[in-house]
Image 1 (cartoon, rainbow, N blue to C red):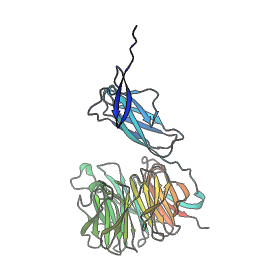
Image 2: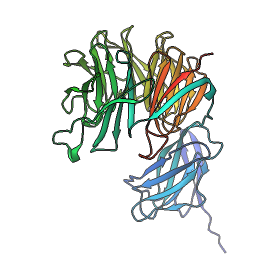
Image 3: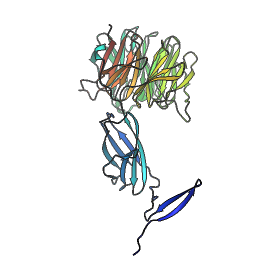
Image 4: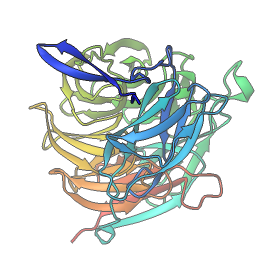
Length: 458
């Protein structure tokens, strides 16, 4: 009786002889040539002990799929891809999962293929330090986005917009900073020829106290608009397309310039604050190979004449000279995924960068171009404001539902309840920070609120 055993052959590679088993079933069997499978990991609260939804699409119907993290197989039994090339499962994130970006691999057989996705596991900070801060809150209108404080008017200007295009519900509000009551509100004009009675919905906001105006970004219409602070009457609605996907807007009263970030593009749009004329844009060149600097939030050091922004497309921040419109330097940030928020402390020369993809706050020495501290703050760190009176940075963590307070040396001094979807924070320069959040719907009691936060005096 003769037994069938695998044949052995030898391969000479790089001067080393390897013995390779040759069996009836080849290791390199028929692959899924032209494979277009995609793997997606989604979670509303991506923390250790939480759950994530894992979705596969454009796989080959009938494939068998295992999920792996490193060498560990996460699936008790393989999935079978359905007739539409899809599969879906719920993955329990282990209690001991370390926060960060975790690669997941979908290993498919019949035919062989693989797809990779990133599962973000966010840090989870307990609430703390509430006794150190005073706060007052008021519910406004649905869909709050940003706020800006005007010292000249002693008012907070707040933007709101509800839903996805066509957006028909939007308001610009003037709010009393002491009582947090609405003093005045207007609805933007309808877009001529716009779909579904859409309006010039307002998102970003900045104040010009020298000219008594409020600038807003109309993100959905790729433009900006100007209103009067006194009565919110429209001064000028710029044409559609003036600023591609306009996000933030800031006003430099010293040089009479207005800057708006064209998110998705690689530049800032610039305007004359008095005449409202368009000025040459500021192009932001990335220092990364084949990288594109995509500007998000803006913050101004008016006294020094410097403007700062961060890139959501690359891990970088830029320093711009306001007078010349030239970029002074681009700073590599390292651990900043989808950076969006930025604040600045003129006293220490430190920049604060909030990144929603890496759930952290980076504290940067601008002069040295060096990251000093990397602080875990919570899921979806979206925006940050610096209060010069208390020398504290306030970070709105949209996913975690918190506002984390950090000192200039990277120490967390408070992690406050931010309600539903904290969206934006803004300091008034007097020791107060105004936080606005969104809601899960019109009936959400913890959403659509403006909250004034201040460090208690000893």
